[in-house]
Image (cartoon, rainbow, N blue to C red; front, side, top):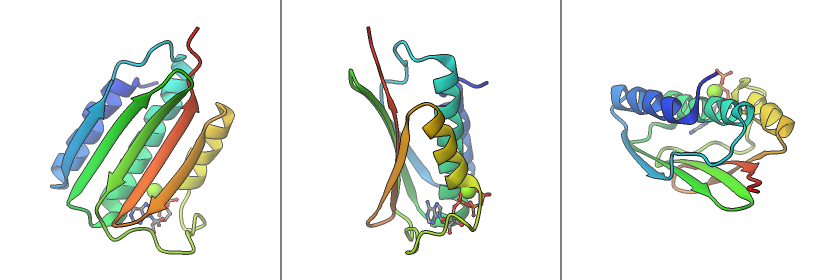
Length: 128
Ligand code: ATP
Ligand code: MG
């Protein structure tokens, strides 16, 4: 599996190559996150960024990592054309695959379509 820090380096390269400006905010060092959860997060981040490159026509992509005592959030925001309603997850396997894997770690996926697409990838973050 890949850790999140390595995946961030990788997606940054993908966005650079696609000439999409990228900003990365937040704490990249995960606190007490099990490696299987980190693997799921890395996979989701990769798919989210692949979708930005493939579908969004964005010029900018913001990636934010927020850790609170009870939640770990990765937000991938683009300024592109936005997903069309109704959101057809039947077109591909990316979004449904993300959702399936997130359910497996009690996480969730939601998106907001407003001046582009914002994808929120969440998992519970239980710090002892
Ligand atoms: P796959 O992921 O299986 O290679 P896919 O990318 O088409 O195929 P999904 O990742 O499930 O499938 O995405 C479903 C659809 O949602 C896409 O086909 C695209 O129309 C739309 N979409 C996803 N992300 C974005 C985005 N960031 N901006 C605009 N449209 C998007
Ligand atoms: Mg996809």
